[in-house]
Length: 131
Image (cartoon, rainbow, N blue to C red; front, side):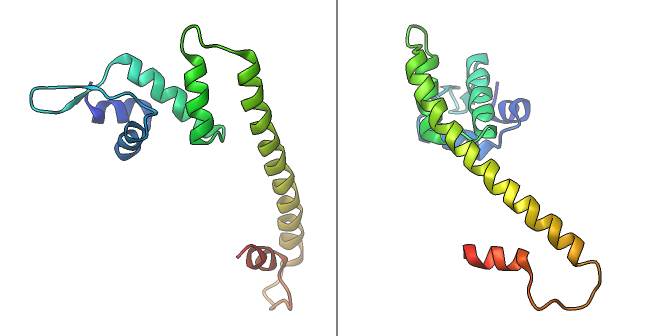
């Protein structure tokens, strides 16, 4: 299949596919005599793996390691456990941040029912503190 077809079937942008090829996450596809990329079903499966891992918040290095471990005869529960454990800590940190943000947003929505100017806005204060 062409890169356009692969992009359409996988929901991944063409430039993202090319990027994954450049950094070695996706194997180079075969080429036509005219130099056009030709992708196999295995490319689509690998791209689906990468896309799902990205949706779940894994970084490029983690995905690279997981792809290596997904190869036949390379599976190692211990190595996957280490990667998953690191990612679990990141997820828990994000959840805690989101819970705090939810409380701030809920309070702001409740307090800002009128159109009068407020002397302080906790949402704006939170965003300014991050800058």
